[in-house]
Length: 483
Ligand SMILES: [Zn+2]
Ligand SMILES: [Zn+2]
Image (cartoon, rainbow, N blue to C red; front, top):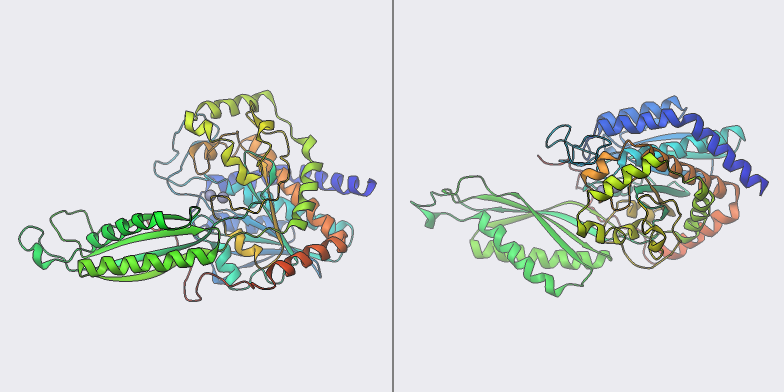
């Protein structure tokens, strides 16, 4: 017990000492929101921070310009700490207010809290490094700068190139309104472009000579909307028309493009639905006498958590529960955010917390604007209604992830409310709490080889008949967000 306490005190002291440095890093990334695979400023800032903390930085990991690692120490165990730092387009928002107001209209914003995510993971890496150093221990801590999580599956591309293969285990977290274990699986997905090519013509003078690519896109979407009834209920099919062929209705559009995102809890179902959607696309091309080309944009696997690693992480999350404290000012601001929600958003506030660990005990959070409890650990064999590229890491090494409260209960993901709370004291506290939990988890596993053995045994058992197969073919390259 004394040992546990001294480790906890050591990590808390390090994080208290580095608190200003870490919050500055997070706020800097928040102020420079960059979208997938173009996060150069954020990457450089994190790399400089890692170098200042004695990590050896390596850039261009897996041939991705904004992917990097920071490594400290030597020998096993090799601990991977995953950090994200990309933003979303169209979510520019002023900080610390209670109404939507863009800094730059149409600009980017940190609507998923990845400024906190990348920095909370940096906090963990630094605390682990300090612990290895102070105790002269064998072991390596490796921070992974993972770009392009939002719609880009950066980690899946990195996993394809073997970036995580040498790790003994990996830890990460995600900001939310709850403190809990992210123990649910997630949806596997395929994101695929369908491009139709026809013949343009004057829409009034010679429509009979035209073959409309836009018609093909519309017919394809109609076909897929009929398919919906005949797929498993937890499958999802979304699309976005990324090229309508132009703005002139008096032209028969010769080029059109639609981007599909196909999701399901199991990759095989995603593949089956994809094959059926391809048939529909070919059908649409036949009907319109156009041609179709199909190009995969990206994909990711379903998340397979490591329960033994989760158990350690949950224990550590509980150990910091009594440090979750808020000021009246913080509570008042959280109430303002709550008041900004629609009735429907308020109704679904607790449902959306399930993905972040508040699964069965949401009654603990009723009437609260900020979570000051750790939600019960409920290892359920079901998928949350969303995807994450952490999934592909989980297929390669034992992985666990938690969430800590960085925002008001009810804050929708990818919303102005999430952006505006990204630099608050509550956000900073949550970020450091996750850093603390990840560091304590890593140190506990490092010092207890029997736990690591159990963790790795579980991993081997789970994947013995289904070794990792990267869902992104070798020739597909990461793509930046199209304007
Ligand atoms: Zn997101
Ligand atoms: Zn996110």
